[in-house]
Every structure is written in C-alpha cells, then in structure tokens.
Image 1: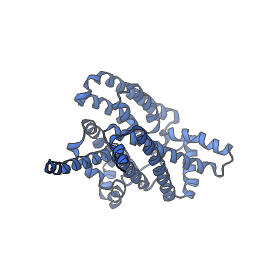
Image 2 (image 1 turned 90 degrees about the vertical axis):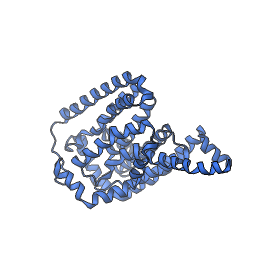
Image 3 (image 1 turned 90 degrees about the horizontal axis):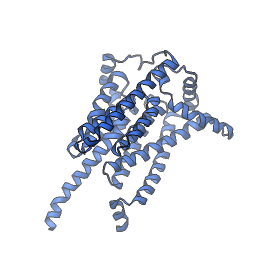
Image 4 (image 1 turned 120 degrees about the vertical axis):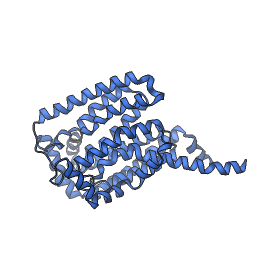
Length: 341
C-alpha cells in the first residue's frame, strides 16, 4: 500500500498512463450512459438524426449550420455501421461517437491538469468532477457534439501552448473554426500567455505570429462557411435575440442559477477563492477567457443550457479549485511538521 501511494506521489509515468486510461474509459461509459438516458433513445433517433440530416443538406439554420465539423466526422461512422449491418446505425453511431468524444475530452483533461502541476490523485478527482459536469449539462439540449469538441479543443490548445508547439496550435485552429465560432479566443489566449507570463516572454514573437495566422485561418473559415451555405434562418433562444432582453431573461430565471449549480457546483467559487495559489498560466487563461465567455453567453444564449459553460469549468475552474485545495493541505501540514521538528 505504501509503495502504491509512493508511486502516486512520484508521478510514475506508466502508472499515470494506465490509471488515466482506465479512469477515462470508465468515466466515459458512465457519462455517455447518463447523457443517453437523459435524452432518451427515441429523441436521439428522431431529433438528433433530423438535425444531422439538415446539417448535411445545408438547412440547419444560423448558427448551427456553420458548426459542421462534428457532422462531417460522424457521417463516416454511420456509413460504416450501415455496412456492418448494425441495427439503427444512425443512433448507434451517435452514441458510439459520443463515447469516443467523452474519452478524448477526459484524456486531454488528464494531460492538461498534469501540465499544470497537479499530481495523479488530484487529476483523477478533477476528471470525476468534469465527468459530473458533463453528465449534468444537457438542459434543453441534444448531444451537442460541437460544444463538447469545444471543451477538448481548448484544453488541447492549452497543452500545445504550454509546450510551445505553435505550429500545432495553428493546425488545431482549422478544426476548431469548423467546429464552433467560440474558438476565436484560442489565438488571443496564445498571444496573451506569451505576452504577460514573464517566464515565456522570450517566445512572444513566435506566439504572436502563430496567433495572427490562427486568426486569419479562423476568419477565412468563418466567412467561407457562411458563403458556402448561404444565409440561414436565425435560431433564437426561446424567441429572444441576443441583447439586453436575453441578458435580463438569463439573470431573472431561476432555472439559470439552478442549472449552473447542478452542472458546475461550487467549483468556480472554490477556484476563485484560491486565485492566489494559481500559476501565472492559469491566471492568464482566466482573464483572457472567462470575462468574455461569460459576458457573451449571458447576452447571446440561454445560460441554463450549461453545456455552454463547460469550457471555463474544464479549463480553469476545476484545476484552479484543485490547486487551492492542494495549497490548503500544504499549509495545514506545516504546523504539524514544525511540532515534530
């Protein structure tokens, strides 16, 4: 038992990989089951298949139609399932795709949390919290593949930034821009990280060039999708257009705060209270992403659809809270150590 604990604390590479994979697989099975149960097979067969067909036909509406990546990726899975003679190939493929997507998110999250300096036990707790959030974020939703890809792409971008793999960040922007317009903050996060983190300023020029290229790619894809698919009927949020009316609706509705608490818990509060224990990297991510993200979504979307808040939860709040808990534990251990001495 002591050896196992020592291996956990020392960050043994093979043990880390094994436990990360096992945990990610088990949690992905649980999350996928919870999401499918919440929606129901009938809903997936009817609504999910209908929207997927509309996406392929180019008639899904604004802004859905311009978030084409997930539907382009899931269509080959559906065709393969059909060739294999799997019953209800569309529904099967959607569920299988969601499992693989959840697995991808959790593995990326584990690697990202380790990059931030968290040890294996804290990482596994973080994955459990993230799995909980993902399982309780489907209010007024379908499987929302593009939203969940957003979570993965932001954390993957953060990993690449921390490793200074600027070319890979640029390539990631191609996928991210085809997936969802919210990816626009990735280049800004890149340039801010290397501008304001004193330890990284030496690479600022390379980061700025990569960010500029990423923004150009984003702009080309953003405009290109709208030219290719043409004007689409705007899909309002319960009849509300973005603006003051939607902001007031979000602030006044009980369900907004209920769903935020159900999905995020008190993790954001714990994270903010631990702000002084965050590394500069996480602080920069917070100021680059959270104010804009929260502000835009309160003005332009139904915040009760809390899947929209999974990016700041996974990228900033969960590791921020865990870093605060670790710091509290270290401070609590100091008096006892002094007494022993």
